[in-house]
Length: 563
Image (cartoon, rainbow, N blue to C red; front, side):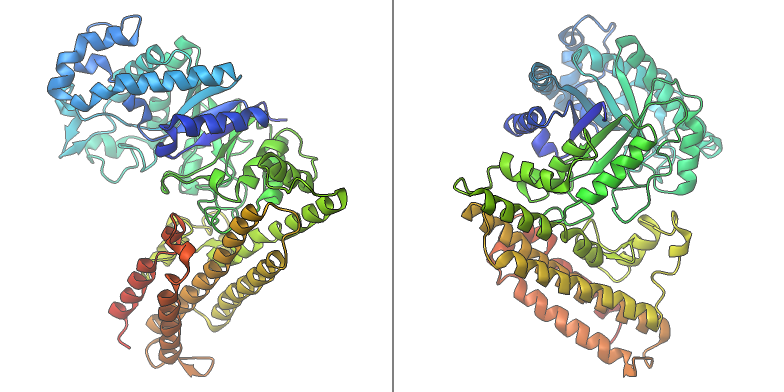
């Protein structure tokens, strides 16, 4: 059993909504989860100032003693920081409510992160027009001061989960916007990682808080550098690793860092919402994958997991709003007992969410459970064939592409599978055989989606009718979703084939221009039909299948290829 069973909130609109947080705390109590993680880049800078860099002469014993020294300077140099007081009170209250329920609270951020008034305190941080990440100020002064102040402001906080070296932070040694000074050019990233980690660590040790460092790293060689840096960090620093390398791609292998962090305790992270498998708008049961990933983690001495329930890229939306809430139930149950039957997780989901009719006989209940589990266990294979190509990422965070070049960049560079599985090198080779396989994969997705939809539509076998209709809408969405990627994949491969082989080339003894024109016609017709579906006017379904995306994609083809 995992000792840390954490639920992560990543959407700021939910983090700063007390009723939504209470909803998640209740779920955690019911399902014996013991850790809440509030994930927002720069969240600590919505709380701390830090006072020293606005003129405070001492830290004081309370947050307000820091504030009273700098209130005038806040109005002069950093007026928005005046809101830190009330935001701190809000988070302090959440920590107190969670503690009453036996739940610890962590914040999750990305470093380096800071407010621009830091320039007034130390103007020479800016070189060549941008901030310099290799200045020792960051780890010798800034980070220790910031985190000491954080624990004065939030003494009940259990600790911080952080990642650095990622382009999502304001500043990193690997960031393309670094100042490019001689020190930056010569500083080994391994040394930079170590300096940042140690700069943060001291105030954590003094306050008795936990520091958890993530391996949010894009490339295999960067992961190796990160792993090397771990050898020189204090043993009690916890390492948190996504279950797959780089990001939450269910088709990718297990993260090679799992079980290979030396003496450090380790947690893993899993996205139960579906940033890379349909946002829950297209249902996708990940229960079998969860069992496999959690077993691998336990076999490699991992002690905790973090279940991400939403994504900052889609505001006001989480697994609590979709059928993918099933996956959160799954990780909560399997995190305590990997031997639980999958069917039992379905019952827990349906029962706790009060989705079952109350008048069901034992026979009807069995039929309902058999039906639901059979239908939902077929959903992930559909999603896999829809938005991946032979396991490679072929979507823009589950959305369709907006240009002809975007899928190639996403699949081969940004979310590269071949970096981790070298034999996947030629997935996007524009050969006749490969194109046949790509299109066949998408056709199979459509066929399976229709099969599942018809199985679910043939009759409600025990759900409350309004909830049955809500689920049916998600399966209708799945049909449209599979067709979208089938059509856009055809247009993509035909256009790429034409550009590589020439306008006079043929495919299957048909002119490639003819095939591309037919694919464009089909995609235009599909696009014009989208708004006829009333549920596609609802948020966020309208986001994932946004007609503007298709139009932008088609326009890009027209600009690149004269038909």
